[in-house]
Amino acid sequence: MTIAVTTPTGNVGSRLVPLLVQAGERPRVLARDAAKLSDAVRAAADVVEVDQGDADAVVAATEGVDALYWVDPPTEDDDPAAGYARMGAVAARAVRENGIPRVVFQSSSGADARSGFGEIDGLGRTEELLDETGASVTHLRCGYFFSNLLMDVDGLRSGIITTTMPTDLALPWVAPGDIAAVAAARLLSTAWTGRHTQGVYGPADLSFGDVARIVGRVLGREIRAEQVSDEQTAEQLRSFGMTEKQIDGIIGMSRGFRNPDYRPEDARDLRSTTPTTLAAWAQEHLAGVMADG
Image (cartoon, rainbow, N blue to C red; front, side, top):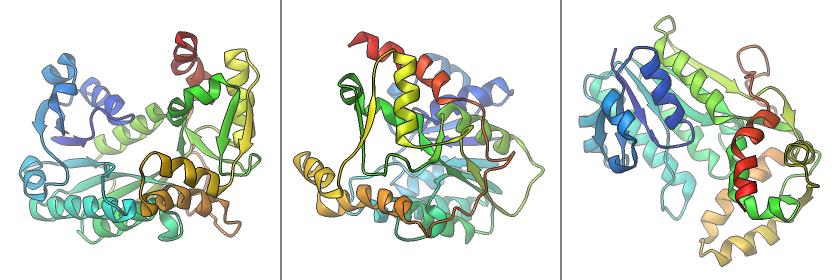
């Protein structure tokens, strides 16, 4: 079996590649910058340096592939949803032209709505493009990554987690390693065909208030969650040089999840519930980073 993995240095891909190797496979990894791969990965995988936005190059890199793990990488497009959709079109072309029989796509909770979720709408469009190829496809509807907390270490050190979400709104949170495990199981199995969606939700839905309390206990410090307005967040993002469409793509995700009428297509059940708790993840990945500061 030849399994191709995109974004192999990402939060999920960096965990997925070793799992496939441990299962006895030699994956084909598509990396934008092969120099970022470890020597161990280079020895155990076939490395192809490719820009996922280059459709001709991706088609060539995925020739002869039996299964593809596709992630829409972030782009510099003015409209991030359109950027994701553009990447999705590249994947669909490669699947169609190479006759790739099975695809596992790293999508997101909210993609099922197809609109109203900011940049996640681009993942919804990618789902549609992959569905149209005729391949057997599984869309992993992932929850909010625990690893996103690493993007605001300074805030955690000051004792505050800020969010545009109501601090009592519970959402699925998940460890990237758990997503990799689900992806590996799906890629290695040849027992499924057709179109499937699968939530990847972690062990429990959590509000930002819950997250603050759990992380605070692990770190041994007081942390509280604080809701900030969309406009406050927009002003901060403008200060980083983001365009209005890029800002709306980020804030739009929160607007979608805040919509009381939204009900996820994928239920929380045995298939969607994964084991790693936030406390366990924080102890392993966050405590050391905080201590270094």
